Image (cartoon, rainbow, N blue to C red; front, side):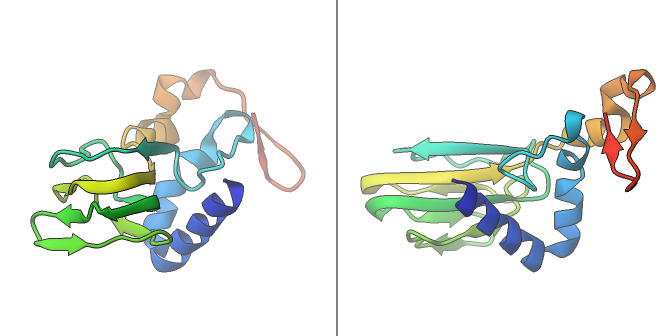
Length: 149
């Protein structure tokens, strides 16, 4: 799992450098310098045999990344507003603004799974104000100016 996450990290950083900086802002300030395996994203969902209804992920920050896998046919990913249908295959990495585009996948045959990486918009509150706890947290820096909580 770590190798897949690291690969996605590098692709996101290379292809979307300005968005990458915004996405990682939350996870860069997690307590105890914790860095999730999903870095630069805060969260990951594993979909197994899921076929979704049309929706927008209103709480997603900027975009999400989806990585399909399994032994399946059909199950295309549909982006409604631009009228795009993606025949995603194992190994594809799809980056799209899940909060702005209505999306869903079509029915499929076989075993279809997907990894979905995303960050929640509410992470901005933590990055800026520590959800109101910023005045109660003690932050120290080591000799390399690295934050220690």
